Length: 259
Image (cartoon, one colour):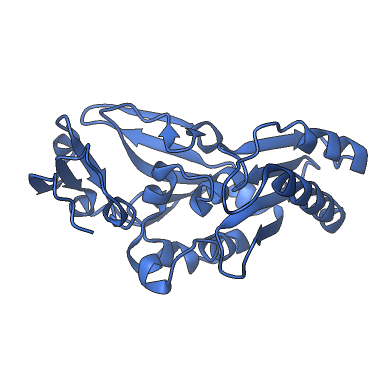
């Protein structure tokens, strides 16, 4: 779609280019920005010119640049959740070839699978402005539908996955109302070597929910925790009651699978 209100397009090549003027919007692949009218956008700043290295491995973490494409992330062998969450994106392979990990998270839609992935694996997000940096848990980044913790002068720089989460035992469940439909709910679970179990619920809620247990909970304890979520999303892709019921079912299936 043409963005008829855009008057300026510039490519960021240095960090100082991240100083956004009023009305400017930073983009990676731009697949969502150009999908519908954006009357408030008068300028576009292309982050791809910064040429951030898509994947950086350290001794204790895997850092994914916000500009890394979902297609590239999908092929990484570090976790089965990479492919599973990438394939949860309601888009063709052509979109996966262009859409970015950071763009999907920063758009902050309930069905954003990269948000599900980052939260499931205890990732940390790195936020940059032209002259500063801050970090926060991915679980605290998305605050609601298209509402994030980004400040007006910040962009999402990268997503850092800790090695301990990548190496944990993992489970995944997702459902939609149709075979290629938008996510109704997406539930993941992990068990750390310490025995701690982490269950995440996304896709069916306006923001991510992370449920932590010091050890594998019994069925009643887990159900009570999931039932404590009280703001299930309501739209054409699923009613709140259905999203809640399926999340309860999936959480219990994952508890049994990882026990």
